[in-house]
Length: 158
Image (cartoon, rainbow, N blue to C red):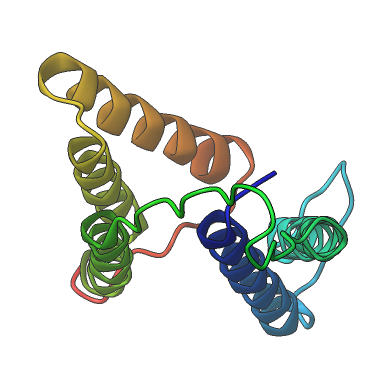
């Protein structure tokens, strides 16, 4: 049985992902979808927005069905787990930084900075942090820009 704090955190996460999925679907509904043989700009936003929406709904259903019950003094109630505000605020800051850098300098630079910052917050240092940021950024660029031909946002200054 999960504590009340964990249940609320998961509920908020599912609602946030649901909102992101719906916003992604809403913003990409007019983009041409294409096919598996010839992908168009709307393919990935529609597929991932749909998956995110669907999985969020499933998560919400599971959370509603398995919500913690108050014992009202009967039996031992689990102690609530602490909320780590520093980590939450760090990742919100990284997301805002990612958006600002994407707008100004482009997606590739923003992805590198966001991955490096996220890895640092999670405790990665040295070569592991460098490999995470460089390899993941390179893989995203190779797959989307070169292989699939999906133009990644260049930023207003580049």
